Image 1 (tube, rainbow, N blue to C red):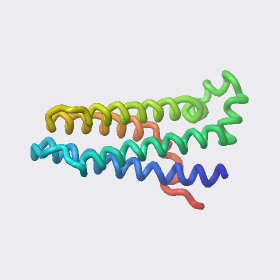
Image 2: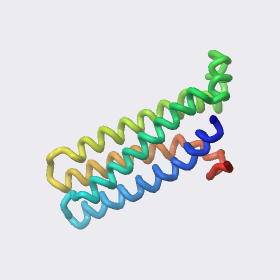
Image 3: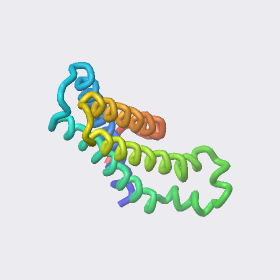
Length: 148
C-alpha cells in the first residue's frame, strides 16, 4: 500500500504544478486584459486548490503509513539533528500544510465580491505564494516519476 501511495503522491505533484501554472496564466490574463472574473477563472482556481487538498490528503496518508517516518519518530530528538530526517519528519509536512492554508485562504479572498482586477491579483498572489512553498519543499532528489 505504501509504495502505491508514494507513487500517486509523486504523480500528483505534477498535477499541482500544472494547475498552478494554469491558474497563474488565467490571473495574469485577467489583470493584463482587464477581463471579468469568469467561470473558467473560478474553475482554474478550484482545480488548483483541489489538487493541493488532494496532495495534502495523500501526504497525510503517507505520513501515517511511512516506514521512514516511523523510524524517524523512534529516533526521538536525534531525528532533528539529521537534516534529511528533519525535512521528512517536520519541514516538508509543515510547509505543505501551510501551502494548503495559503491556497484555501487566497481562493476565498479571490472569490469575495471585489473589482475583477482585485480578484485576479488576489488569485495571482495566493497561487504564486503557494507554488513557491510547494516548489521549495518538493524532495527533488527523488525520481521525477514513480516506477510502479
